[in-house]
Image (spheres, rainbow, N blue to C red):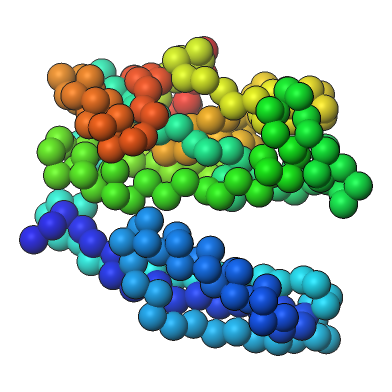
Length: 247
């Protein structure tokens, strides 16, 4: 049996007014994501609630059902001091930090289509860039190399997400400069005069997922991920301690 497999996905769409062309576009995006993740979109629910949502507002939710071999579940318990932390490049902000983004950048119809030189694109293109889905490249890696830990960098950034994959008494030492930080994060930092620690505690800073592997397999793991089309970098190591450090 494969290490794991996700099978099906259900979606839920709530809106103030059901515009068929808008719903079609939303479902197309969900479907594309399912293809990337190897899932079948088999159903869902659409709720039109004009008394609760504004006419142009909508809300999305969903869940996947999968299967894992219990003996092969990756829970971080095998991570040891000296293991290597590999980062997979993000495509942008992904699905977190948008409350701060809106507060700092105040995207409006009047500026969302303006080309921003430092971003190399319009603000709208950058802020609406889809979250990367790493399912297939990571499953391919797992089929060839023992991966000891996995953490998706979502809300809470580096400081909240990476420590979750470690056993008690082990944490990570992350080395800045080992991966390219996307221009959007520097743009946000400057526009909002945000402290560096707060940036790493809110955003993914160019790393959407991290993996822990033995040092002996680190370079091979990076090569396999790059062959799968992912930008992968060795960004740190596992050390004794309880608090993640970024240096």
